Image 1 (cartoon, helix red, strand yellow):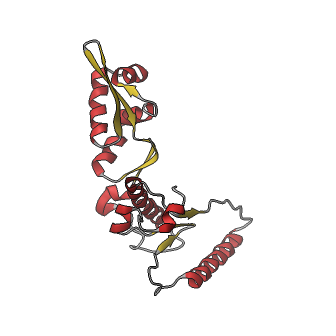
Image 2 (cartoon, helix red, strand yellow):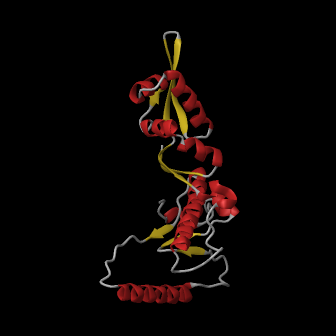
Image 3 (tube, rainbow, N blue to C red):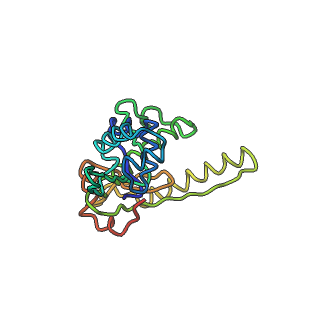
Length: 212
């Protein structure tokens, strides 16, 4: 079982958001059969079986054991991950795009940046899991309490200047074999079709990184 799985297909996202199926996914953090789940969730076994088949079809649960009990075959399932994240890519053309209206003071733009972060890191993580590799990332999580709005404004100006200085110092457009990274209080490689599918299988930094 994975710690987290990224859902990129619209049909899989729809399946995971169904109230009954989300309850089944939560219950299958531990292996269980349709009969066991029916008892836990207070649902008819036939209904549980139907939803299990749909979840299995979308790769959200997997068969772990199949055993005979008299004349009946018991199938035991488990969720493929402890938790799931739905990538904005599942929304297709209506997913948030920070390039549409960049504005550092806009909450909507910040939300679009966060959506792109989920989409890009999700693509890298999915590729890493397929290739059994690690992903090199870095993140900072901090809290700050401002005494006034003017302090907040000063902080954002200093932060912007510090990041701009660091980016200017380390960015090398002409570096042979260089790799582009995105910085949003975090650092991750910008996925390309190749990197998303192979998870940087040829990148020695990927093996030494953290899989987040």
